[in-house]
Length: 325
Ligand SMILES: Nc1ncnc2c1ncn2[C@@H]1O[C@H](COP(=O)(O)OP(=O)(O)OP(=O)(O)O)[C@@H](O)[C@H]1O
Image (cartoon, rainbow, N blue to C red):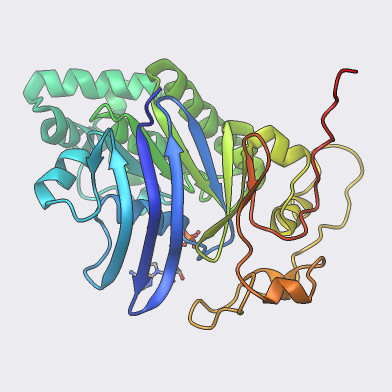
């Protein structure tokens, strides 16, 4: 199956300071991909760069192909045809993404006009169908609500309805549940997962929380200082992370069951992107680092099928293959 998105060596810097250092990935139709990592590791910049939404001072190189169309350096008209129609994004804080002076239904109708040319009664009927689809109760009445009259979870559902208005092939959800309380978080993740399955829409879920992506995604990229340090199937990563940074993220999660244990924070700070260590960027915080880790950026290697790790001393080694005698 041809990938929907194919990125090769995508790199971004701002005033000479690198934010993303050569990201390569494929996303297939209907796939759920998670991107995790601490604040500033380049998760959002990846998609803002792909969609041409970064300020002019950003220097972008590499390639992002969407269904064969190159997006890096593409004319504005090409990018406008992609944004909202082929690729939609939702963000962390629905309250600031919605316009406070327009009723929520009107905002969805506007997205329908822009992306699908629907107007009047047809736009209203489709907005109502979308509200039903995203689980907003009493959809007909709620179309006339103002953003401040709805809860955070309901406003995030409105944002998802707006994102679905253009019938995208890929939805990028950037920390979609971070501003919501825990029970609502789970409902929004279930909703995104259900829509992905119903519509065979690909989903990229950006989060700093490995637990959130492990629940929802097939595959996970763990990012650190603008690079992918581990890429693995979600379950495998959760059961046995290989990169010491992924191990640290997992150890920082509260256990779901059993006695409450002390959470283990990753020591130290993410390095300043303008003053990166000479070798592995994680080495100064890594319990397994040795002198060789400072010699150069560790190359990515395949640990086992589907699992790629950029580390000289991964914590997890694949089981030896069993050979039939
Ligand atoms: N407009 C900008 N101007 C200058 N630097 C920027 C800009 N946008 C992002 N950056 C820098 O790019 C780097 C990556 O940022 P990005 O927002 O992608 O991180 P992130 O992993 O999504 O983190 P967060 O969860 O905080 O959004 C950071 O060092 C950030 O400071």
